[in-house]
Image (cartoon, rainbow, N blue to C red):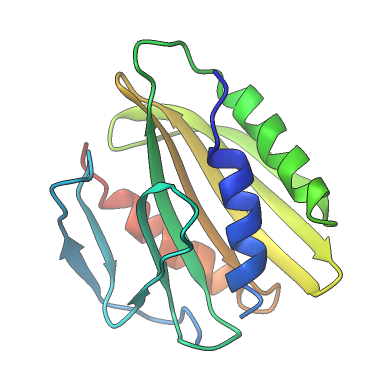
Length: 172
């Protein structure tokens, strides 16, 4: 299935995550009738609009760099089959097009909110600096999901732990 999520993710992570800390955060319920899921997000984080045509919710920990980025995106499959491995290939190609170099650190099957998928961690080197990210592509009945956290290497452990709490709150 050809989708625009991988390129969208690649561009957005470079434009914002080199940009607060994740630290200990209280999560608050977030509902939007346009979303096919509910989730709890870190209290006080700011909504981010990348004007990239993606559907979902993106939040950052601060107005100015450096900021932790969490994106929870979806794309209707419209009855077509989706292959999460192809989605990762598209994401990796999109990062390369922006001048970045990815090193995959891990890959595992992961299930969130009852939807199965694959989760990977990467180290990203780009002319603007270095980032760490964790991204999950999930293959739901009606939608393809792409959930990610991106942060600096120094804050990544705390951001990833916070992201795990966010993912545990997802309900489809």
